Image (tube, rainbow, N blue to C red; front, side):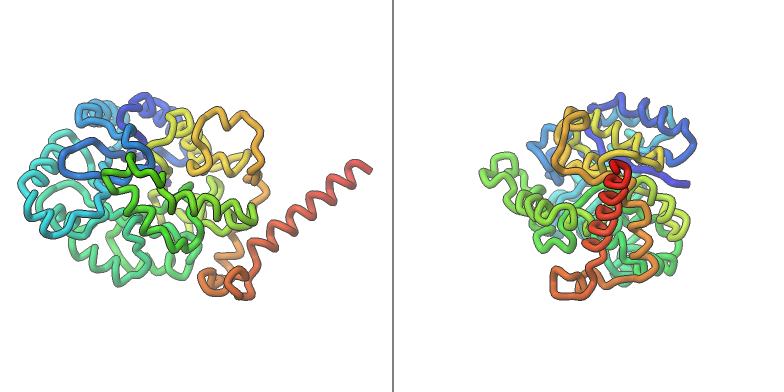
Length: 355
């Protein structure tokens, strides 16, 4: 079964009923919501000022309602500064926090710091998922985490078209796999660790650089538009069944939790339908700050249906994207060629229709 995991602030409780309406369609279902809460122990990855972080009371209300609709809740604890010393100093508080999550009815926690993962697997009955922040890109790394007691791996942002790697995941039994759908970052972005470190800093909201590295990535994606967008590892709604049926991936992550609730509903509708006829850029929260953008003209347009068949090349030919892309001197120019050929064909059709 195709299961979507949707990011939200737990303050947006009406999203649960919208998820239930999506689930009535009988295609992909919203099985989980994930988000973060304010607490005295951890800072968590934040793309904004932290205002999207709910309180524990918000979480209690959200979980109670979600359970009525058979929807699970996971809590993000994406703290990157949890050293072994930090965990040792705060172990009683951390244990109390995890115990409270169990009592509330939270299904599991999403962790990115190895010391926290080690502690949690030994001190809670919550399910433990490993965040994509760790960029797990080998079976060796995954095996070590499985041996710790992890039950789910959220795969590296950049492995979505590495089908040699994705097919080998079947060699690791009894593990759940999750992959990101609409998070994009410049392919093999050298600044990705800095993105995460920057946003996990509790002083982020006061930072006068306004996350320089994140803005740098944003600008890079707009150079040579839309080629750099095509190189990112997004998954279109239509391509979700491909990953599910051929690779056995069941969980698909829809980001981001700090997005406007109406945008989150829009993302949910598009992905649960497994079919989307519109501007692909509207599915990327990096470029969508307000639901008003859905009805306004944009200079950034990639019609989703124009990418039908785009993914097949990567599965059939297994290109070495990291080393053989034409932008780094390699010979593969598939993304560029696909777009140019597709648009040349469309222009010829339009001209013929006019004539």
